[in-house]
Amino acid sequence: MKRPTPQILLTGVALILVVAAFMAPPGDGSSGGFAGAVTYADRHFSSWFGILAVFAFLLGGASLLRTHGRRVRERKADWHYSAVTLVSFLAVLIVGFLKLGGPPGLTGDPTDASSWLTTIFDSVLSPLHATLYSLLAFYVASASYRAFRARSLETSVLLGAALIVLLGRIPVGVTLFRFDSLSLWLLKVPNTAGQRALMIGVALGVVALAVRMVLGLERGRGGDGS
Amino acid sequence: MSPVHGWNVALMTLVLVTLVAIGIRRARHGHTAAVRTLPGIATIERAVATSVAAGRPVFFVPGSRDLDNMQTVAAVALLEPVAAMVAERDGRLVVPTNRSMVMEAARTACRKGYADAGCADAWHDDQVLYISDDPLGFVAQVDGMIVREKPGACFFFGFFASESLLLAEGGRQVGAIQVAGTASPVQLPFFVAACDDTLMGEELFAASASLSGDAALLGSLRGQDLGKMVAVSLLVVGGIAATVATVTGWGFVHDMAGVLDVLLETR
Image 1: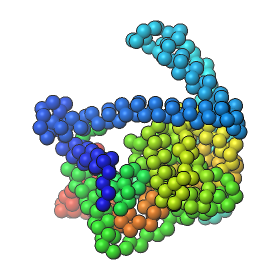
Image 2: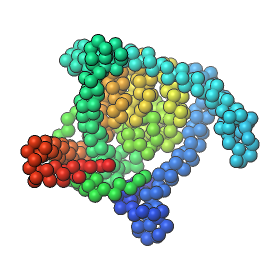
Image 3: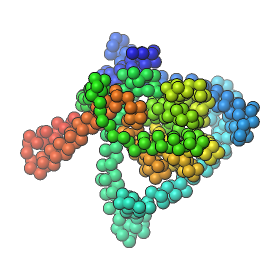
Image 4: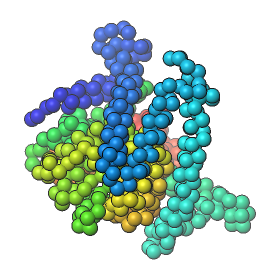
């Protein structure tokens, strides 16, 4: 069976972390020995992921520059969107690195209120976020309309439950129909029961996936499926 | 990571791992497990075939979290057979990602999927794109790509927050066949409302095994199902014991309910 190095690393680290989760003694792992190693793994492995993710961002940035750069160079369809992406990316990167407008030096906070980066964030990014987020109101309405069309018994039950919950959460529904307690019951009992059943299934699925990965069976993460 | 220090959790984990391992071992020894076809999996195959036949690309979004999230790992695992499926039909796969490590993992999965289909030369790494770590920036560009490229199939697998409905409605507007899968209970209703099919909870983690048809992987699903039967049995027995103990006041039933309560306690 083929056992590439990433698979051996994955299996080893996974076993250490499982042992650490259940057996790590208190302390910072400086005591040495097996107990110390397990404690150290338990305390510090998640930080290592963060460090790796920061370095991996360079790959993402390089990929973004290459992909959009080629699109602009070759004047592919909709290349002007790529030009906007490139200019925005590089502008914010330069403003952030040079700490323009804010406290200079290595210790200067690039997110200081006087910095250009903060101005860009507050004046450009936040309004764009709000604009995009506001689309959800329309999307929720159109998706709800489709979901609540009473075409079958299941969708009729869904419609009925949704109406009760909606009326139970607004003053007119509470005053006219007294749906507040029924609405609360629907949320607390059938809804919680369904969510818990789902979470039990998810936990079992995660365990099964983890076992497949540790054994090198799962494809796509270093396993060869053999 | 905080230590669990719970002997009961360790015991239950050991039982589940053993059941899954037994399932895999039995499958390797020729005891094939009958696994029902998930409706979502059938829809994935139909969507890829329809999309490629119409000359439209296939979009696959592997969630909006990094590789330390098991849903992202499950999505990347599912990407490989989907890539093979697209490659076999000579279609075009586009994978937008919002984490650099996911981008690298997705490229590896796609490369292998195309190679498995005998089309290694047809794969280009640029088909997996890094967009942005910012969730709404990611959604804006992916929705824009969907509007411009008009994919015939959109797959959304992994963890999503508010992006779920923004992406799924974007795909719906261009008439794409959509399949989603997430273990996030809060986002499931949005996907159910906006997509043609949805893999719910554990189905997401079983999908790659189900799609691959590999005996050992299917055996692990058998073990997973046995684990579910153990969990359900303990819940039912515990519920009955607690009810009987409350109604009758019998000491031994009360003790039994107490033992089960300790066994299933996770806090």
